Length: 326
Image 1: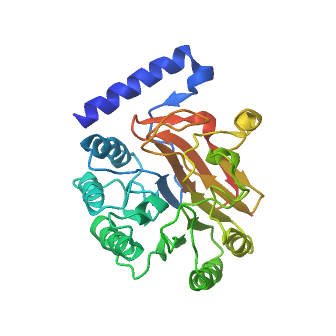
Image 2: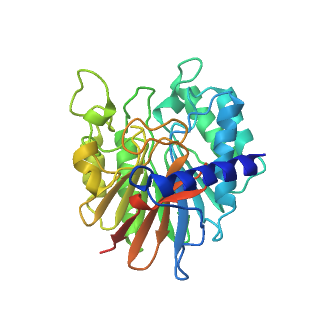
């Protein structure tokens, strides 16, 4: 049934694109896009906000089935936080159930978001326990802390986390010291480094305006107090990709920057900040859609980002990016 529904949605979107391409963009359902010399291929989504509703479970399954059907098997699926809506054990169980029976990628990389820290008892220690437990249950990865690093095909993924239960992040001095050490070690490989953090760096991707609250402060919607320290560490190295979520913006490209007030990918030539749309909710600005995210194809001299509706199984080629490595 999931396969049938997803194919039906893809057909409808493709038909709409013929009549309304300026609005809906350029769609194709082909999954054979990767070149033969690809070193690493992974998908990234964010803000799943799983609850006990089976409709949300099935919405995620649409995407998992799509990824599983790729002609070129994904090396990893990255989930950039807000996996649950309120950090409750029943929501984690539903997320686990959604993955049951699906193998969307060879590896799963799971990051924590602010919603994942809000347990039924409003206790951060409990939220941390849930995250570590279900990280193992879902991805098979055993971790000691809510922040960790892993290696896939020789490439380093560094996963950051908040250490409290507020909306912005709190990154302790211990985690900052750990991040510095991990970045230095990863840089020795002379390969791109992928840093996963649910929260964007302050005042990037149109923040604070894209956070959408009244009476906003300059740092609203970003990491918060430790943002400048994180940024300083990451920008000390070349070919760093920071992958975030949190602000629920839809895809936006350079030609739409003046209209939308932000772009999905910001780059200074060496540091690249990628903000992912909300997977579960209709995005509230830019391209209005859900079920969306990027695939990353890593080559020797470049990284290609491809925008996709994983729930419908179509590419949004107007929002692809090619980033040259230095």
